[in-house]
Length: 114
Image (cartoon, rainbow, N blue to C red; front, side, top):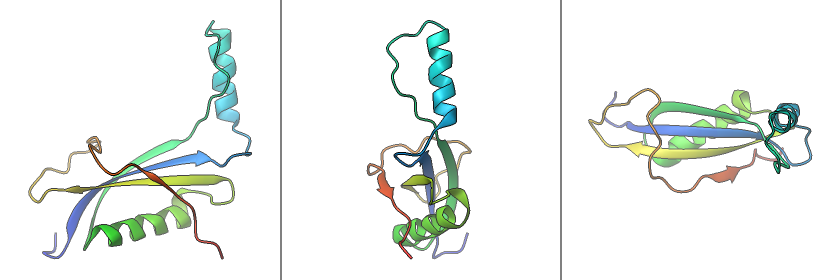
């Protein structure tokens, strides 16, 4: 890793936008009811991606991950995404699937308006 790069653990949570049909969530809700679980009124589905990356700063890392989301990871027409970024201490192992640990609460990130 170059000397001017910091390491970050990143979690990206992708979910359907409000008002968008969520067939996976609906299927899970019906299956839970069929299994006898009563009282579940809404189930929302989504994806959680975890990655590790190097960048010169936290701001650069967030900008990079935002571009990744807008270009590939999320469909901005029907999905929204939240980014959680955690700096990794120098020399700390970058373990696959390591929990994100304490970090600032994830804030919804909306794609840039054209």
